[in-house]
Amino acid sequence: MKGLRRWEIGLVIGIMLALGGLAYAQFAYESVTVSHVSKALTATTYGAGARKALITCETNAIRFTLDLVNVPTSAGVGHLLYPGQPYVLENRYEIVKFRAVRASATDAVLKVTYF
Image 1 (cartoon, one colour):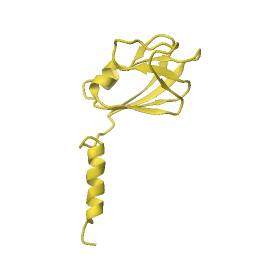
Image 2 (cartoon, one colour; image 1 turned 45 degrees about the vertical axis):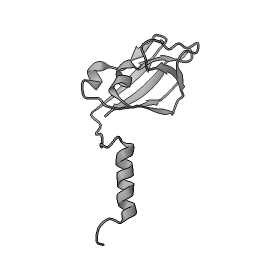
Image 3 (cartoon, helix red, strand yellow; image 1 turned 120 degrees about the vertical axis):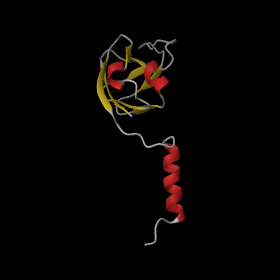
Image 4 (cartoon, one colour; image 1 turned 120 degrees about the horizontal axis):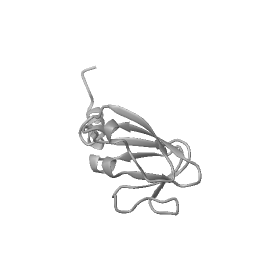
């Protein structure tokens, strides 16, 4: 084998571009319980270095917003995230502005990995 073929090089470049040009390494993780009051992610956990975050809804559905203007409510304000569904916060702004509330009468649990 003499090295990578053209299509293999193109595949590697495509993956790097999809990741924003950089490979991100996980550096923090947390589990967040979301109740009837708007909840943010934990600033002391994600610190100054978080550039992306992967959120997975583990138990019950949530509603979330990313703007600090519209507070999510179980009555319908915000985007729905269902159990088992992942969501990627693409930049630090979204991580800092993320707010969530449970979408039903039962608390939800989010698993969050920071990159």
